[in-house]
Image (cartoon, rainbow, N blue to C red; front, side):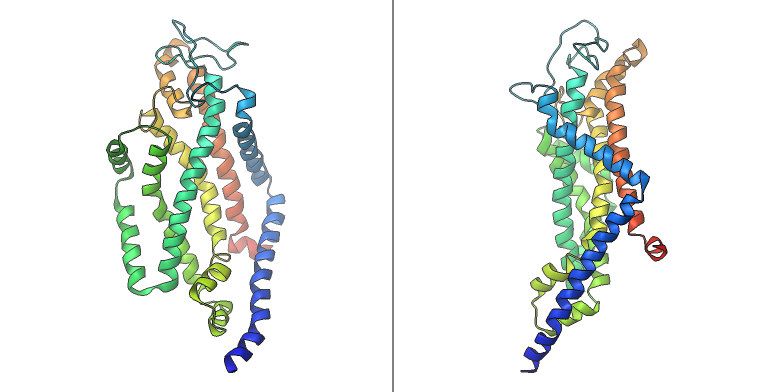
Length: 312
């Protein structure tokens, strides 16, 4: 009887407190973002890349049967930019069209970045919530596993994983990168859960008899994911930068793939001979892609900075 009375008394306040908190957070983020010129610039750059990725089949007709393989334009030397080839060609050995490569490479990079982020985000959030909410021995075991991954030399282990998988391609890179990248999310999520789990509305939820799963899905997750989402947006650019670097080294991707790092790798031998366009155009795309996500992530980070919030 007492439990029912407590539940009837606390449930409306509990729901209102949690929902109102989320609404205020979202409204504050939109307000601060409108006041951030660099954040808006980053958003415009990111939306431009997303637009190019979506519209790639209309910008450049896909090469069949694999649209992520650059069509071949045979010539003794790389061809400079022209009406037929706006960004020129790579010449021997793969004879690829650079414009096709950077446009379809945009879609390829977006798919790569989002796939890796979704996998790492999902695994990291699950591990972080379980460790932070339940604590004790389970928390100790999970965090030691995370520390083990942090202690590994990233590039060396990446090479080992890529060699062990053997086959080059999209999912090979996604698998290898995700195996090493998820611990960062789990550590951040755990810290947020440790902060939230002692809040008054969590204690009230326990008092009215909500199960652990109900508390996690209704209150823990909605109030801890802001920081992780911002971190994920900032890491999207670094993921593409890392995978492009591996592509430049000839790792993870097949030759001729419409991937920015591979195109730059093909152009490095032609730079001293004046064929600058092979490396410059995909390099510009990489820089703008990373810059856009970094500016957008920095804007969100500043928005959530406690000092900024107090001034606002």
